[in-house]
Length: 178
Image: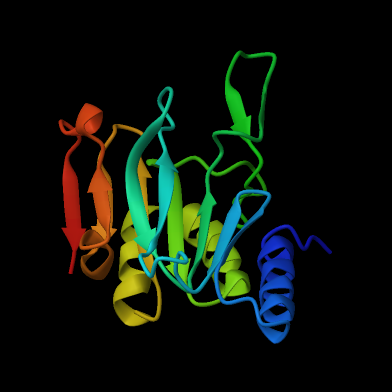
């Protein structure tokens, strides 16, 4: 049994619950790349989270959230290079048993619970962009930001209001999912 697709999200939920029971009303938790926020910043503004630039240094933009889990999946950090010189990612296609190969560089899920974000980010990354969008349209209890290998960004309409592209990346095509 591999709990990699839900373990960090579940642990984040447990820590978040524990902190709230202890009276913590404002915090950001980084659980190995899974981010969970409790409340807002002490001044009442939303937390600012950088969305990593997978094609180089810095971030492509900033996401503003409060009381949310933000979980990203992709094969950009955990992979190996085969004898053929090709990169093979760690997320496995359950239908083929081979690493996922699709148009997605990453997918970020924004939801109320870390375990839901963890499961959805891995599953929707494996499904690919069109299937991820289709799933969101029928289960819109979360939001997403998808970055494609060719540098396009897809955002659900609610998150579009809470995401700002860094000026360096103003040439990236941004698609709003409705």
